[in-house]
Image 1 (spheres, rainbow, N blue to C red):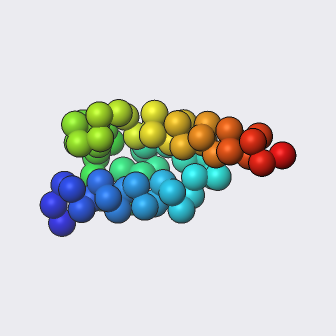
Image 2 (cartoon, rainbow, N blue to C red; image 1 turned 30 degrees about the vertical axis):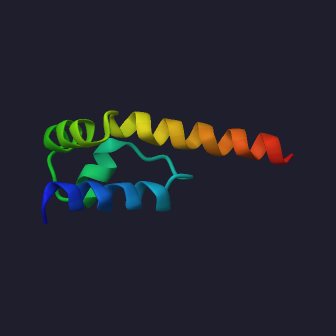
Image 3 (cartoon, helix red, strand yellow; image 1 turned 90 degrees about the vertical axis):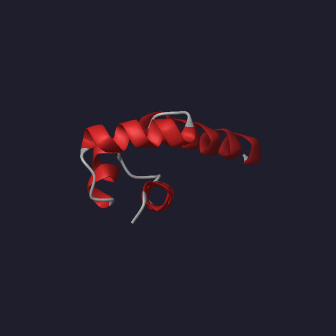
Length: 69
C-alpha cells in the first residue's frame, strides 16, 4: 500500500470514529505505520497534523450542530 492510500485509509478511519476519543497514535496503528512516520507523511500530504484534522472536524461538526439547534 502506498503512502497516499494509507493516508486515505487513515482519513476514512478518522471519519468513522470521529465521535470517539481518538488521536494520531490510534490512527497510525490502523494503517500499520510508526507514529513518527505517520505524523510526518500525514502532515506532508494534507498540510496539517492528524490531531489538527481530528480537532477541526470535531469543531466543524459542533458548529453544524449549533446551527441546526
